[in-house]
Image 1 (cartoon, rainbow, N blue to C red):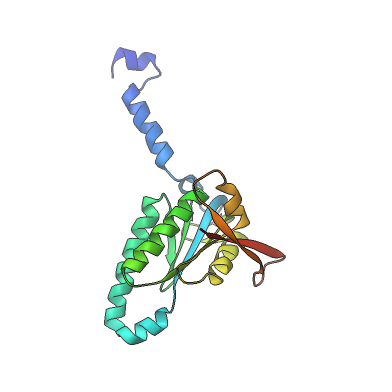
Image 2 (cartoon, rainbow, N blue to C red):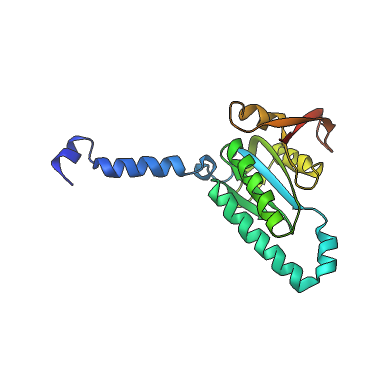
Amino acid sequence: MTARAVARGGRPTRVRRLARALRARTPAHAAAPAGGRVLATVLFTDLVSSTERAARAGDRAWADVLDRHLVTARAAVALHGGETIETTGDGLVAIFPGPGDGVRCAERLVADARELGLELRSGLHAGEVERTSDRIAGIAVHLAARIMGIARAGEILVSRTVRDLVIGSELTFAHRGEHELKGIPDRWSVYALA
C-alpha cells in the first residue's frame, strides 16, 4: 500500500472503486439477515399446459425439456440481479431488489420459453416479505402467486404497486381490471406488460 493510499483512508483508490462496484451489484435482499423482513419484488412463473405437454412427450423427453427451461430460467434470474428461491415443478419463485429487474427478467423468461416451444405465464408484486434462510413468506408472496394465476400464456401480469414503482422507465402496461384474489382482502388492480 502506498503512502498516498494511506493518506486517503487506508485503501488504494482502485480497491475503493472495486468495493463500490461490488456493493452496487450485490442485491439488496442478499444483505438481509435470514428471518427478517425485506423489501423485494416477487416473481412467480408457470409453464402453461405442461401436464398435457408432458403426456404427449413422455417422461424422459419432458424431463429434458423441463431441465433446459429451468437451467435457462435460473441463469436469467441471476443475470437480472435476482435470486431463485425455489422451483415449483414447472415454474419458479424468484426475488429481485427492484421491480424493473423482475419485469425484465420475466420478459426474458417468456422469450426463452418460446425458444423451447413452451408458453410461460408470470406474475409479480413488490412488497415486504419474511425471509428465512431458504424461503420467503408473507402476503406479498401470495399476491404474486395469485396474480400469476390469472395470467394467460405468454403474459406478464403485475400489481399496481409494481407498475407505480417503474413509472418513468421504458416499461409500459395495459390495465387488466380489478380482481378479487383468492384469500386476499379487497380488489386489486392488475396490469399486463405491453
